[in-house]
Length: 172
Image 1 (cartoon, rainbow, N blue to C red):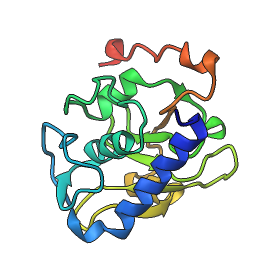
Image 2: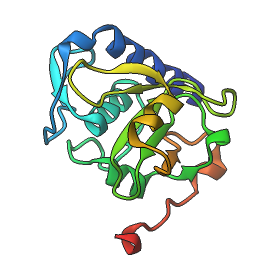
Image 3: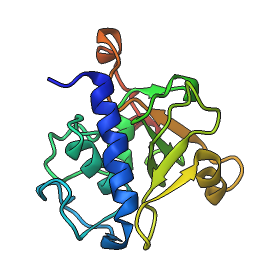
Image 4: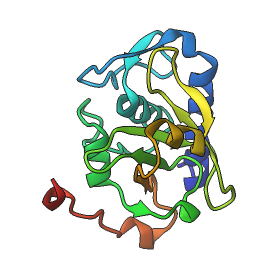
């Protein structure tokens, strides 16, 4: 059974593979998310939340939507399902959602904010496939004052596994 850090590194590795193969990864808001595709299958079409979901599955991490990889989900289900954490507590493989609930865009962190003030992220926000950016550059796409919520993809220890995500339904 892989360790937490091996699963986190696998998330980074599969995201880096996607960046290298971005000419065969297309953007489209497709549901269900094509989670039934075999690992490293090309070409495929998905949006930002579908991309993060597929990369999580291919790297052996839990479904960030909490749906056991049934192909459903979006940034709002990630915000409702995963624990919210400060940037300084993020590790590689965690997620960042831009915009208030239900969210505008989600990226995967290639580096954690626990080590980097401006970590590298992978973003699949349009045609051209996933690309690597500094977190601050993605934030600049949304303008000043855009809220960012950091999400723990995979608990680092048993205490985090017990943490409940916040109830966002009242904010809708």
